[in-house]
Image (tube, rainbow, N blue to C red):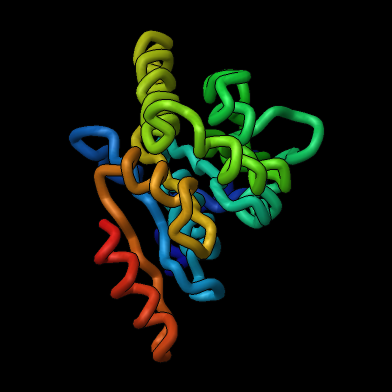
Length: 196
């Protein structure tokens, strides 16, 4: 990044001197690919942090049971409720969104290994593929009423096409599919597009 365009903030995080333009409406972006190791989490975390540095309100939803986005953003995964509890209807997104230290306008809803159970526990539920979409809609309402509307929501997905990823695809308006220039990653993108 060109140093002439950025400045240090009080908390030590680089911020752009010029604020980024807000999108006309909230953008909800799922970051997914059936293939693992192609940069889904790295892309999610870095794009979200960059937009936050530009003054935009950003939320990352860590929908991967490995919880790497939560780890990368330095948010608590074990002691606080996270996305598993949201999907099971035990809490709301507004109640478990955590501020990311050093980024005033970046938040994360954490994941942990309990999320691996969600694939099984969602199966018998009515409208199981809509649970994340409904939780996000509720959060959007809460944020609008509080006068703190979000600009971007990024959903970091596991490397599979199970119920978690289907929930993410249902909830999002846009999709970002990171790939590496190798055969299996390209094969993953074809399968992902067919499922969409």
